[in-house]
Amino acid sequence: MIKHLPDNASGNFVKLRNSLVTSTGKAIGDYNMIEEGDTVLVCMSGGKDSYTLLMMLLALQERAPIEFKLIAMNLNQKQPNFPEHILPEYFKSLGIDYLIVEANTYSVVKKKIPEGATTCSLCSRLRRGIIYTTAKRLGANKIALGHHRDDIVETLFLNMFFGAKLKAMPPKLATNDKQNIVIRPLAYCSERDIASYARQMNFPIIPCDLCGSQPNLQRQKVKEMLNAWEHEQPGRINNIFRAITNVEPSHLADVNLYDFKSLSQAIESNEDPLFGDIAEQEKPSQLFDIQLTDDANITFTRGAKSETISETKENS
Image 1 (spheres, helix red, strand yellow):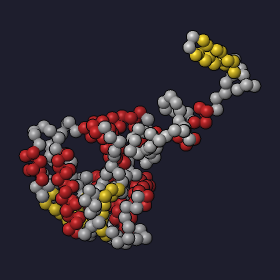
Image 2 (image 1 turned 60 degrees about the vertical axis):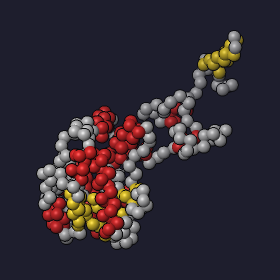
Image 3 (image 1 turned 90 degrees about the vertical axis):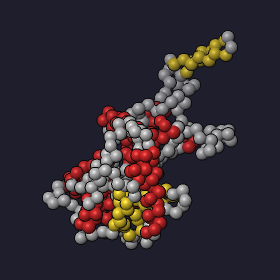
């Protein structure tokens, strides 16, 4: 029997854990991530996110009304000082099906990337190819990754700042070869909650800096920016994520998503304030219930002439 709670778990921890399970289950349901008979390859890096992902899926597997299989997978990329024993021992303690894949991508990355440059992009591409190949070999039709809500928001800003594109990490996507479906069951979970859960679960964390310090990572800079915004106004990161799920193509500028050229007459659903955003902290009803006072004047200027009209309650 898998142990889902630490010894002497507090009421607050149980509440946190249940909230994560609920959020994970909701994301899976909203995007139909897992179906009857699926085999899900759970990618495990040894970080807090992947441990949390595995535990959430194991919890849901026990209570779900459908049957699906989980296979935990770790890719040992042969980084120096990588503790190879940690994940196999952890998987055995859970009594779950797992696979360790060894591929010396570290030497490839170090050979291709100049000293001092960031290695994450090439490393990610190599890792992705190996994961896809492994999924096919195992007959796994779903690949679960541990990206959470904050990762998705950070990716949105990275693509805007450096790719000039409104693009994030979708909770569910088909691979380019259409052979696999990638799912992100933690899409509704915040990094803060995941970190708190992982600390109290005392997972045997493997550090993510085995490739060495990379101070120039743009993702870290975006993370710091978002955390500063969150500190200034709590809830801002969640609102940004909710915006990704609530898109109005008619109020952006992509002619491939909305037929602006054929637009000849406004419809009520497209109405928007003419001069920028709705005032902060102000309800729309407060903006549009404004009445002109008796002494309000409106001046119309045409050519060199102007005409002033006094608006009153009777003629407004």
